[in-house]
Length: 427
Image (cartoon, rainbow, N blue to C red; front, side, top):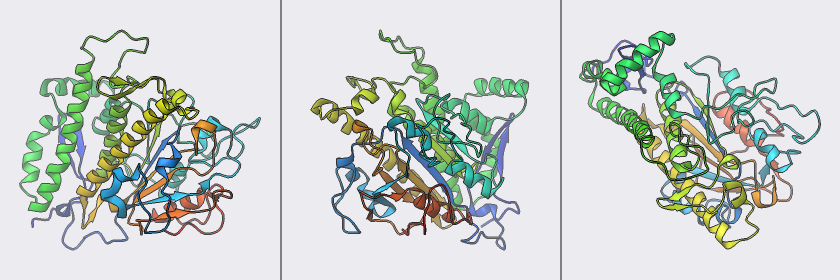
């Protein structure tokens, strides 16, 4: 195999556009292979601020022999790549929806006078890891109320607004320069129609010097970029279609809040692309169900109410059926993410094994505004998965003990974070 004497921060370039590459064996010289301890660990933190229905999410059994719950059957192919944890919450973080900004901070007393948030898990990790990537972290959102909600908070307790436009994030990741230069780049892209078309010559020259395995990896990666471009173009085309009569805000980019699952899927893809290119190693994604109005469950089928009103189902069979449908579709999106990360190879590992994925919520039960026994799923990261770790439901263990586990996996040397107590949770 031909080994280029350059490190992994290789870019394809053309017309002012840069495209970062995933880790390829050919980007390391034979004498400079990356050791296991040097391979980057990553973290993707996802929270739906209305949670999921508890009963179909949590398994009845515990340990390794547990039977998959109805929701988890959607993830059956990756049973050994994730762990379910029950009996976790943040001590003194109560008050229903007021807790949503505390999911990654564990700041106590969010409803008390003079409350001030604390640093979030992602920001703490980025501080400790230092400037190892172009973006220390990326903070994303779906249907998010950007002025009032975020998973990311500074050490001074200041909200960091989430990016909810895949189009804007795509430009941020691949276009560079001042305003005038970016406008010229956009003009070229309009002419060429695609970032990949703009980079075509460089891609051809670069690809021919790669080994067979790296050619396959590069092709898979470029296919991912092409798919995202096509989806963004589809969103732009949607804008030209006649709109049905509605009292909702007209679509802008892919911001129509009714396109809930499409936006969720797209932002997950953008987060994966950022991790795959090592543009960042930490991504947060807040799914703002609270701000989501009646949305499309399936083609031609809308929910009968906004997400928040559905969550206060009061045991209504109609509302619970719609919620279960929405929850299952989110599990399907997770399965797709797991599949894509398992197909992306970094060195001798799946990217899934190098990426911790936390899916959870500040809500244990949105119907009753309960903030205990939070739904927590941890996938990837090369842990000893395939189990249900159940802690006391009437005396929860701090969720920050799990955060401590994740920080240490990232290589952050700390024995405390937030409300953590004792040792990290062993998985």
